[in-house]
Image 1: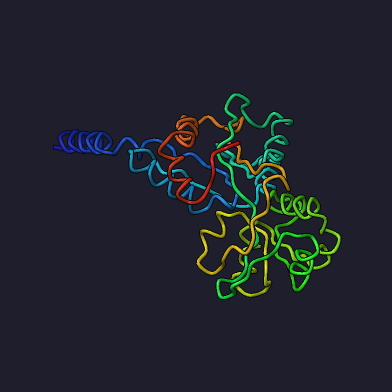
Image 2: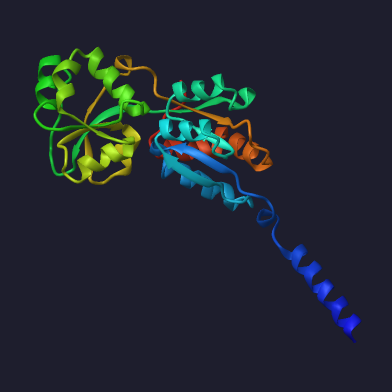
Length: 255
């Protein structure tokens, strides 16, 4: 009887293993993604999971912080940066798979104000300097891509020296957005997609594309990754379904 029970238990275990969905047997990829992708990338991950894949585990932070995490030996499968510079830094240290690198998306740089304020910021240098110097101006930290794009735009428009003393920094572009949402700063410089994602702010001005380097989001597989789901998801990000979702969230085609 004992042998019969053991045999039945074995058959039950085998049957249970067979019954486990294929997605549950595969390890989900770990994705390190720029904070400005939160929301849109979650929607893409959900769509991917609905196709029977394990849903990616996504860690959001400033691109600079994520790149340093990889440099320090942190394990992950994919890196999505908000600029090329931090991807270049990992490439120089051979921490990405070069052939997997691709430019995924584009974005625009804007000035935001609280949704309760009906304000338009002029881009003529004298008027722009006055408007941005009237109170704290929320921006991402200097090493963060959004912070660098913002400073480049203000320099190109000739107002950085007047505005710089009034800048308050957030550790990511979403942190800078939060300062405006909470009323800690009357104006902030963020991506257009951040403004679209928040009902608590409105766009008060759009920087000319020529005033800053092109805002692009590269993606690459990390050199230490051995998860086949990572490459499959990377390809999905570049495909039509994912790109349509990103456009719905306000991203532009890569330039």
